[in-house]
Length: 512
Image (cartoon, rainbow, N blue to C red):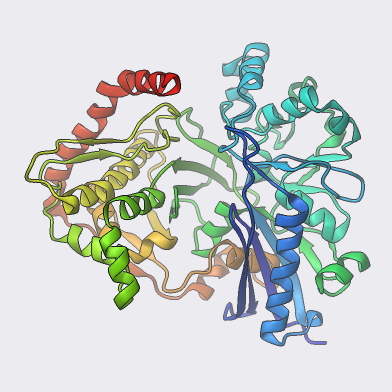
């Protein structure tokens, strides 16, 4: 049978998405399947791997095959990505022994972070791992498992991430990619690009960790048992896989040093490719997906979710109007904001409504609307929210320039790119041009390309550009730079001046 298709599947926080493409990148079919985020108690966030990950994967594969009429024998290779970093203990057959502990939104291992910082030393951890310990780090979560659920830890054959689990269920092989493994702080040594046995010793038996490989490396082949469950053909090659953000970067052509992805989702995530390791305590770093490439990552905690919060609390009339005429409330808000002059007539918003990740790394930060007068309406506040995100992006862009890693190209992706006025504000505030691919299918599209790369269908990772098409260019208005420079200074000074008060409010809120 002629192998003429590639399949990619991505498991996200709330749904699994998949895409089936031909070898030119044309989409034959796409599918999605929702799943539940489990919050067993405050500060915990979990998935049921059997239901959410394996069940979602099977459902999406079935929908792709049924909806396309493509035979599984025609699929040349398969790739997957998952939210990361996660922690899931598995038995010898790849079955999860408990719910998966999710990424930075799960903060159960605070005590273990302090314990490891004291035992190893914060400077030593950063020097060896390229990252500091935080709620994003998997090492403390493994230690939490060992201390609190020792019977599960002892029974575990391997402790890996989401892609480890799915690849093991499909192939019987145990893998994790370098990009994801670097999030297993303090277990991964950046210099040697392998598990740091001396740092692991007090956390996890090293033989419980999966092998580390490059994303597009072939991890194994679909087994007879997995073929019966999923509908994939026996022997289909399966690559090691990656995290969703990294695959999303590939999906829009961010593969070369100097390129950066701005992912406008519920949060805003940034991935920049570099040709050598660059580390800074205010950012995250890791090897990228291909040998000889590296990456800097950053993330803002509330961006798209903040625009939704505003819509649901301050624009219910527009939501009602949307139900009558079909015109999106978001598009109406964007138009209203566009009619407000830059700077929102003296308003600044700090978009720290769920704390903030990089570059301030302050979970106690609070959202702020500063400068309100009786002349301001909701259109001013909404513009200030959009501009606040722009100032947050600029905070990162300026930091990258200061440490000698200024991006040369910015590619935007995600649901927020539908809001062109927002993109324009970000470009004007940061003084950058953004490139928006004409059609994006997200991380699963990148997974499909990486699956093809793994079996040699493409010369190198740069061939993804032939899949993408000509992007829309969002330039910047240089005349606005002096004004936005002044507003940006207020943005930075506002946090510095109020951070301690924000933390005081956090303490008070827990007492009330």
